[in-house]
Length: 67
Image (cartoon, rainbow, N blue to C red; front, side, top):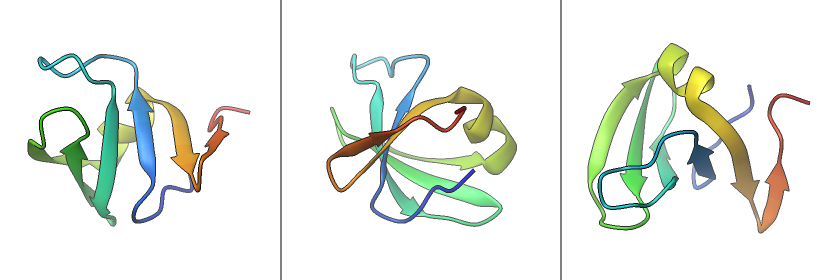
């Protein structure tokens, strides 16, 4: 799955603040994500993130990672 810095990822489940979108701050084996709603930052392993991603938003275009 091609997830890059400064991409927004839309996840299947929402954050407790209600937002589904996260900004990618760091890539690698782990990802650092910032919630687009409240600004909370989390680290998540690549395996978990790849299972939870619905869409990748890059430069205003939506990319379906499962297609």
